[in-house]
Each structure stands twice: as structure tokens, then as C-alpha cells.
Image 1 (tube, helix red, strand yellow):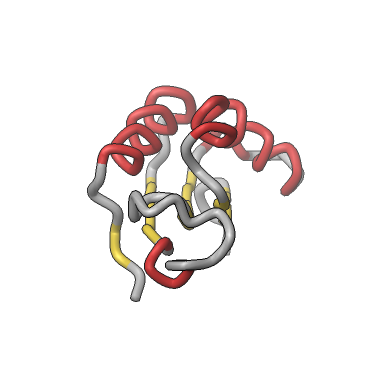
Image 2 (image 1 turned 135 degrees about the vertical axis):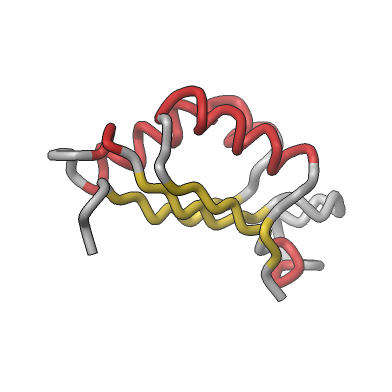
Length: 95
């Protein structure tokens, strides 16, 4: 089951990406339930996420550069609190 994330880690992801990238769309989806009991599951229920983000900051950027922008905005969360994150980043008007 996937949920639009509402816990403290998800709130921090949302706040940081909003501040850094001013997205026109941002969905932070908690995928942790799918990974319960697997490596990286810390028992918090907030270890695995999918981020769907649309931002003008991504215009003209490669997929790798877009992921770097997201990872830079989340910095320490990615090493300390989040085990895995799938990132789907696009610029406005992209399919």
C-alpha cells in the first residue's frame, strides 16, 4: 500500500523541496509499508519514499541533474533518515 506521506520525515521532505525548488506539483509518497522487514526498514514507517515533483528549476536539466537538485535539497535526510527514494522530476509542460 502506498500513502501520500504525512509523518515528520515526509513533512521535512515537503518543506525542504518546497523551499529549494518552488514546485508547481509535489507528491511525497510513503512506500515504507512495501519494505517492512527488509534491509533499510528502521521500523519508523518512514524509510522509503517516492517523490513526484514538477518545478521550473528542472527546465533544460538532465535527469541526473534534476536528481542532484532534489538530493542536495534533502542532504542529511538522505543519509540519516531515508533509506531509499525514487524521484520522478519534471519541468512544467513535460509529459
